[in-house]
Image (cartoon, rainbow, N blue to C red; front, side, top):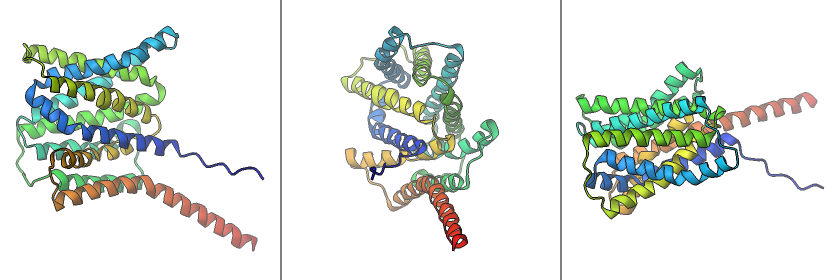
Length: 314
């Protein structure tokens, strides 16, 4: 009797698990980046971070070019610059917004991209989310409120800037969802990294020059975030969004503040209260609902068809 083959995991499940790894990487670097930008100008740090990310990617680009497999088609270049512009806008609006609002409000407003993505996907990409994804988004948004919101109801300039940040990050997810399935992932990644680097360097030279001396710990943070949180993380995102929807991506990215809280507790002893833990639980539950409910419903439908077939045969 031939050996029974193990069924392959669905590509979307693999992609979603890879995106969950991305949020863990970003959450792990939160404490590191916070310390780095307190000791060094923000856009100067971003310039170095993305330059090192591009440098790390260079061997792969050169290898493909020498093998005759690397091409720079104009549509891919334009798409990469558009995606990079959305990513840079997210960083810029968030950086300036944090100067005028509280970190708690900024964290919640940035997380609203979880809600924006399915709305914009339905309008721009004609990709309406399923009911499980909608339920997951609602739960994750409530979880974000519990995790980060502290009851401030006034709206200040910083809140508007951070809202623009959330919109930019939502557009970054949607643009990748539109472009990555039909374009070369490595080229798309390289162009978006180069775009953020060039724009960050331009802003820094205009507003932060001359740079202060570069501390060793800041260089280490730029190197680690450049490789792990930029080249590896955005590389995974660019490749994974070929197989999953923008709504799923945004929902999984709601886990970033949860990971940040866990790593903050582990690295610097920062404790989460009961309210924050409840919020983290809701975010995780929302993600699980969106991931597991469609599979459970499909299994029930198959079981129902099988049972009906047995009754008919009997």
